[in-house]
Structure formats: structure tokens, C-alpha cells
Amino acid sequence: MSAVMHVPGSGFDASWLDLREPADHFSRCEDLARAVSRHLGRRHSISVLDLGCGTGSNLRATAPLLGPVQQWTLVDHDEALLAAATERLSGWAASAERDSRGLILHKDGKRISVRFARADLADDLEAVLEIGADLYTASALFDLASDDVIATVAASVARHRAAFFTTLTYNGAQRWTPKHEADAAMAMAFRSHQGRDKGFGAAAGPIAPTLIAAAFDEAGYRVSEGDSGWRLDAADMPLIDTLATGFAAAVRETGLVPEATVDDWLKVRRTGALVGHTDILALPG
Ligand SMILES: C[S@@+](CC[C@H](N)C(=O)[O-])C[C@H]1O[C@@H](n2cnc3c(N)ncnc32)[C@H](O)[C@@H]1O
Image 1 (cartoon, rainbow, N blue to C red):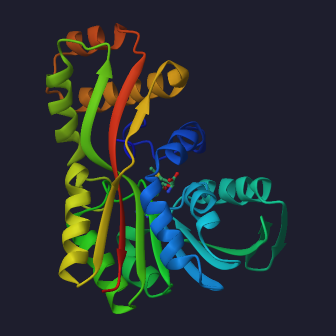
Image 2: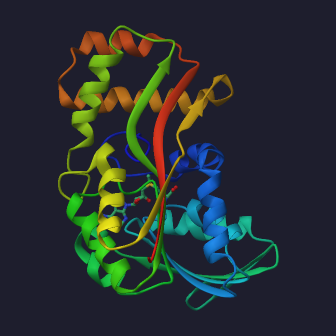
């Protein structure tokens, strides 16, 4: 749900990514983060390719797990998000210099060089993957992608004998508090919306984590999965409200639930929400 929980068809705007970032970082699976640190954090230098980077949230959460010298390539098709990433990352770092190719950041004893690549992963996936990296990563992306995209990414990562770490992939679990009698019908309609084309062909939606794990398993990788579900409460009201509005808009687009029911569902003041996500780390066997 998280990747598509915005006004459907409108792209991802930086304000939505800003709103969700604290919940995203808080919800990441700690065991997997520790495993990333254990397996990859001892390398003095590491290159990282971040697919669908948005404003750079994944770098802000993952860079602290890695070694002192990092070279990141951030890929997105949205120029405005890449510009926002430059700004957000410069503000996040202790110091930031622009050079001809991107940014050099210093933060907590680490030197992080960042290159930005504007590319449409639907059209240019192979070329982007051939940039190559020690670690391929993405956050809140793969439920938007098709099973073919997932298979292509896994095959490329395996060809490079690289590591793979993806966080916050929607897995289909959801619960609202308080409950509403239309929750089940709304969830079913939302699920059908999830399978719609999000730019990559029919989307994997909530089966994305299963497809990713199977693809890397087949490639002989050691695959670990962890829970990164959002467990939102009254302290997260702006996020819950935006989530509920986006969820209802997606349901409306399907036409599977009567308008009046969606209107009634939206009237409830929600004080809690669970949105299931899965993190996956895959390491060469
Ligand atoms: C849910 S957002 C996640 C952004 C970021 N990884 C994060 O965790 O905040 C999905 C991102 O994928 C990007 N994206 C979606 N389709 C894409 C495509 N075909 N090519 C490149 N980027 C794409 C969007 O622009 C957006 O930045």
C-alpha cells in the first residue's frame, strides 16, 4: 500500500515522501538492518545503486549501516524528486559540496559521494542495472513493479554477484482503527487497484515480496526477510489521514465499491492503521 498510497496516477510528490519518511525509517526491520551492517558494513568502500530513490530517504536510512567510503547512484525518472533529493541530502549531511557529477557528503565520519541519474526504469532498466554496484537497493518500489522487472533485477544482481537490500515493500496486510463495516470490501477493491499498471505493466502489488524472495532463492542467494509494517497510532494522524484519503481514491477508481459507501468510510476519524511491509536482504550464496 505504501508505494501507491498517494493520489492515484499523480506520481509521487516530495511532500508525501516527506510525510512518510519518519514512519518508514522507524518501521524498518532492525534485524535486517543489523545483518546489512554485519555483512556489508565492514567494507571500507562500497558502491550502491538505489532504484526509485525519490528524495533520498533510502540513502538517509541505509548509509549509516555501511562503511566509511560510499559511492551512491540515485535513480529516478522524476526530475523534481531528484532536485528535492539534492536539497534534502545536503541538509541531512554535516557538510555537502556539489561537484560536476553530484554531491560529496560528510556525515558521522563517512564520505558519501552521490550521483544522480534520471532514467525511466520501465524503459531503461537493463542500462541502469549495468551501472553495476556492490549493493543494489530500493525502498517502497517493488510493489509498483511487474514480475518481469523483479526477475530482471534479480538476474542482474546475481550476474554482478552483488548484494540486494530492499525495504518497505507492501505485502497486503492492512487494518484500520476503528473498524468500518466496509473495510473488507474496500480492501478487496484496493487489492485489485494494486495490480494495475503503475508504469511497469501489471504490478506485482502485495505479492512482490514473495516474487523477490523466490527470484533470489532461485539464483542461489541467501535470502532473509523481516517485518517493516507501519503501525500508526494517534501520534501519526496526518499520515493516517493522507493514507485513508489515497486509499479511498484508489478504491473509487476501481468502481468496485459504491460511491456512497466510500463517502461513509471516509467520514470515520481513524486513530490507527497497520500497513504491512516486508524488508528483504539477499546475499550471494
Ligand atoms: C514510493 S516512492 C519511494 C521513494 C523512495 N525510495 C522512498 O523510499 O522514499 C517510489 C519512487 O519510485 C519512482 N519511480 C516510479 N516509477 C518509476 C520509473 N518507471 N522509473 C524510475 N523511477 C520510478 C518514483 O518517482 C518514486 O520516487
